[in-house]
Image (cartoon, rainbow, N blue to C red; front, side):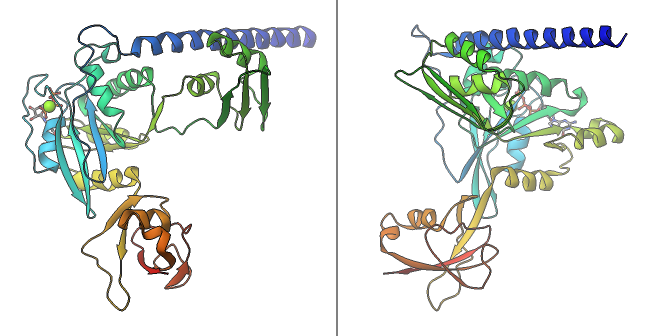
Length: 360
Ligand SMILES: Nc1nc2c(ncn2[C@@H]2O[C@H](COP(=O)(O)OP(=O)(O)OP(=O)(O)O)[C@@H](O)[C@H]2O)c(=O)[nH]1
Ligand SMILES: [Mg+2]
C-alpha cells in the first residue's frame, strides 16, 4: 500500500542519515589518526623530509607516477637536463630538477623517484616524493597508458590520504576556534550533509568545544574535517597518459576525453606541444611587459606573475619602494577598455598587458 511504501521510504531515509552520520564521525577519527601518522617522528631517520631542491624560476611542477611510466624520459625531452631513463623500475632515486622555458617563463620541472602503493605510509621514498609534491604549483601525474586508469585511482588515493586535494577548491567554510561561548553554527545555504549535531560531534573528536562555524556552501563532512585539520593543499593536477604509441586509437580517444587528461608519447614525441599549452593554463601564469614613457614596450623581457595579480603586485616585483612612489599607471591590453587606460594600484592585470608606471 501507499502507507507501507511511505513508511519504508522513511525507514530507508532514516537508515541513510544514520549511516551517513556514523560515517562522518568515523571519517573524523580516521583523519585524526592519519594526521598523527604524518607528524614527523622524533626518532632517528626523520630528517629525510624531502629532497632539498631549491625553488627557482617562476613556478614549480612535480612529476609524480609509478616506476617506469616515463617521467625521466619526459624531463630529458622537455628540458636541457638529462635524467637517466631505463626499462627497469626505480631508475631515478632522487629529485632531479630541470627547467622548461615557455612564454618567457622559467618553469622548474622536478623528476622524482617512482612511487608505489603505500607511499603515503612511508613505503619506498613515497614520503619524500609527496613532501616535494606539496611544494609544487602543479602536479603532473604521469601514467602508463597501457595500464588504463588503475594507476590514476591508486595514486589519487595516496595523495588524498596525505591531505593533497587535486583539482578541487578549498571548501567555502568559515571556521574559527574560540576561547569560550560554545558552538555557533550558521549556514548561508540549506545543508544536506552536515547537521549541527554532526558538526558538534566532529568538533568534539578534535576536542574543540568553542568555535564559530559558517557554511557558505552545501559541504560534505569530509570538507568540514579538511577545514578543521587544516594544512591541506589544493593543487591543480594534469593526468598525463604516456606511451600512447602502445594502445589502440579507441583507447587513446577514451583517455584523452577524461577530465584534466592529456595523452602523449615521449617515445614518438607526440602531443608534447599540447601538453605544454595545458600546463601553462594550469599554472595560471601571465606575462606582462613594461614600457618607459616615449619608448616601445620591452617585449624581450616579460614579467611573469600569477593570474589575478594587481598593479600593486607588479610594482612590488619591479622595485620594493615603487608602490609608495606610485601616481598612476597606463595599461594597454585585454584588461582595459581603452588603449591605454589610466589605472590605480588595485587594477587587475591580464596576460600580455603592457604597463607604464608613472611616479609622483
Ligand atoms: N613505448 C614507449 N616507451 C616509453 C615512452 N616513454 C618512455 N618509455 C620507456 O619507458 C621506460 C621507462 O622510462 P623512464 O623515463 O626511465 O621511467 P621513469 O618513470 O622515470 O621510471 P623510474 O625512474 O623508475 O620511476 C624506458 O625504457 C623508456 O624508454 C613512450 O612514450 N613509449
Ligand atoms: Mg626516472
